[in-house]
Length: 169
Length: 211
Image 1 (tube, each protein chain N blue to C red):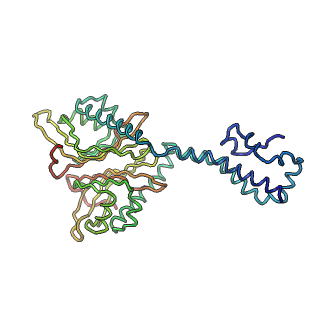
Image 2 (cartoon, helix red, strand yellow; image 1 turned 180 degrees about the vertical axis):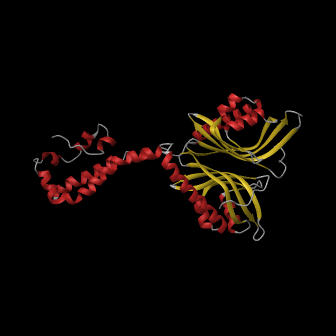
Image 3 (cartoon, rainbow over the protein chains, first blue to last red; image 1 turned 90 degrees about the horizontal axis):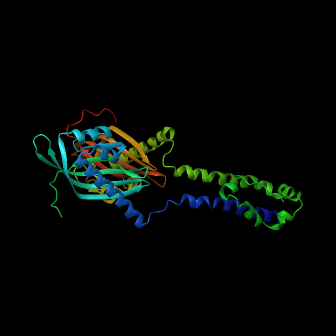
């Protein structure tokens, strides 16, 4: 009975050993370090700054580069735009965007290549025809996605705040 | 002695099979060629299925983990399956919300929940569950006018659409017509509700068309 055992045990070990490299491979996507996290948030912050700048400038090429082709954009008015109609709205709408004054802009890494952005922003607009200025105080939830190494604006839902905005810090 | 080819071994240890075989007791190599079949006949044969399945699994396992890591699943069929799972998860969320059932809410809501109401109030998981279980907020019904799930990455999906909600203090519900964006995340193989922003639609919707 000694010999069979001497064959069986090594074979068991072999089976385990051949499985071993498969386990670490699955666990390689471990939690990112604090530095990775900071770098990620800096990249998405820069992408959102560029989106705001391109919106204010009314620059079609920069907006098209900033928006994902799959953009879902739900305004606080209830209007829902895709990429083409949102580009048209920003470029040919009745208002120009003068400023985005963020009261809160929080980035939440949600998974591989996906970062949520949420908070509160005061959007200052001016009517192209009569110059009348308006301000929308909105809460928002938004999604950024990394597409071919570039962070692009994928989804947005805005909602007007009922109460007046808190004074600027 | 020529080494037997072991299924799965080469895949996990490319070029290292020789080294592994070398750690086997010398007795295997030293035995006359007919001894191993004889040993198997008497004692190893009942274990063959076990060994075979072990080796087969080790050959398949790397393929399976590789498939799971792929950011874009085969959306044609896989997408349908995932959307059905998401719809079931959201139905469970609505049922647990209406019931104010703490255990079911704990299970379906992500620990990282960000829940922004159309009123401007923002809830965490703890504060939302507290409001629902204490019945300070009672949700009587949800009627989706539209509910669309879009897979946006590995284990992440958006839910967009429009929903008619009856909510308020017990017995005094308000009717809300909401535009919504929500995020679902797969956590340990289970879809959980991660984020929500709703916004009141300016004009009341027509009567509910479907549940």
